[in-house]
Image (cartoon, rainbow over all chains, first blue to last red; front, side):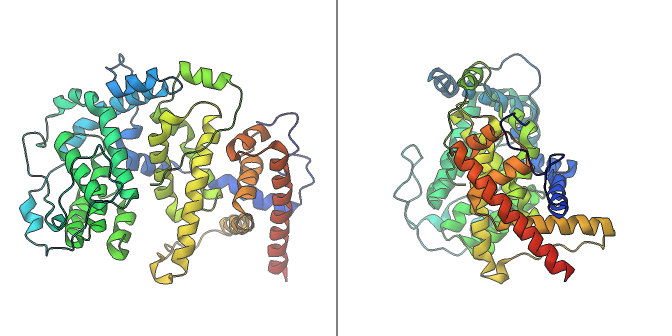
Length: 249
Length: 190
């Protein structure tokens, strides 16, 4: 812990630290999280922190290979492998509980919100966002063959897209950072279509809600939030979403 | 989630080589360092009620940036850099919210605790106030060296300043913390 050239610490035995200061500093020893705190945190992070099972190395996604070969970022391979393993643990369960609601349920209860143009910094890789003026009618993804919950046996397909799914999440978060709600929504929709059993469902649902808020579609945001809270009652995003709905972006 | 790229400070190059041979896995980083990140956020001024959110946000940033970690500093100091920036952002947001009291969530009520628990809590409140009297730079050095008890070489890597500067910050922080604690205890006694 300490090295010979380090000066003595205040809490070290024999230091000339005043007793009152020692007591106060000692109170920091209770700062560690409890098992309950860690369980909550792990639950919030979901599949990302699931323990990878001891199994043969799964196939590595092309993006990870490219990163690994770039030198100095060889960690990408193992990172993706970790996510892949996590997907194996959590993907099946997730696929079974994530539902996709038809557009009509929400859209019919919403007045048209103000139009919002796509942000100037929209990612070039992002799919084309909805045209201006169409934000209020941004449809929820309709049930399709792809986003119908899969049986648990299908999780073995997930590893192929793990790196791409992570990249998609990064793009969506970047869109939110730019306050580009339209692109964020388009990416959330893309995620629902391409990764119905993905490991970032909760994150993308949250992104969709923020996308609606940023786009001025508050009724859609509220409807989506209600479903979100039902789907993820213990979500760590609850406070953030409630704050957004109450106070706006 | 903001871009919280953290500059790394040169350390033994062997670390980068070790990383190349055995790259990081997010779940392992989380498992090994979650308590450290939690403690650090707490000591960097994130209120207990917000620790869940900020700690989770920290690990989402870590997950996004894991590929950028190059092994030039220890994982712990890299994590601390991310936690430090998020904690600082969070405190800024809180200070804005405090100007608008309607937006602040009430503290949850708790049953009356035992006297020794009260004393421990009170000591922790005093420590919070003392740490709050420090600026971000001094606070980071003090937290890592005195509370987390990291070697000064790692503290330097985490905060990204020369060794002498780190010691100067530590000495200044010690004086401020001691004065703050003394002031509080004197007020309490009078």
